[in-house]
Image 1: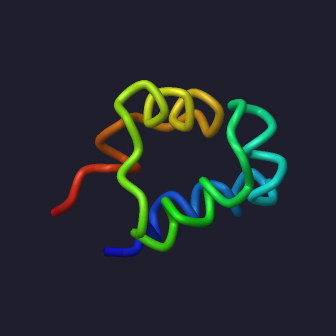
Image 2: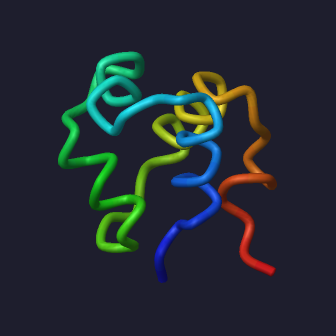
Length: 64
């Protein structure tokens, strides 16, 4: 399942996948795969993404 909430939050901060990846210490491909729903990130990675985007885990990763 695609993570459109992550993509939208990243775009709202005007960050590219590369810029977000550098901010949290992963590759651009990792961010792309998370957004595409092809990679299930660890809790620590989810928290790092949330901190970088000023969002909560619920806002970015909770499925309705």
